Image 1 (cartoon, rainbow, N blue to C red):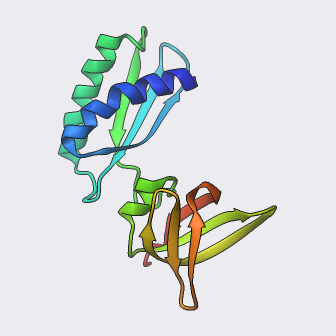
Image 2: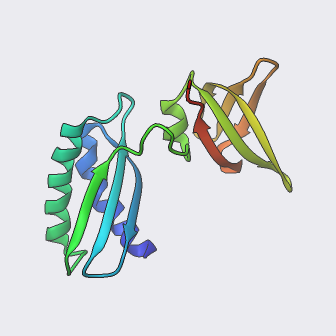
Length: 150
């Protein structure tokens, strides 16, 4: 399955670049003949329905040409939503100045930290709480999410 996900990722990336969309996640569910392919995309400005529709058509054409799914499949292209987990550099970069909750590992211990994302590098996220600024390596973050205001 990982090989299929990588092939889909490689096929989808060039379709998303001209649309200024980032690939967030690729998921394949079900069995051949009735598989569901979910592609989650995002951008700094968010994702509009017309962009999802446009890239869905393009991705579908590329998938059909590549014959990655020899049997029937369903394609869904959508935004990952407001409350989705933050997983990588781009996720954190898109959310600079927003309040977040982070769970990370320090040695054997699981730690939590909340605050505002002050800055992001490819290796770490700096989060500012009321008391301190903490730099947390992205590789040690097991879970992160934006704190919603309601």
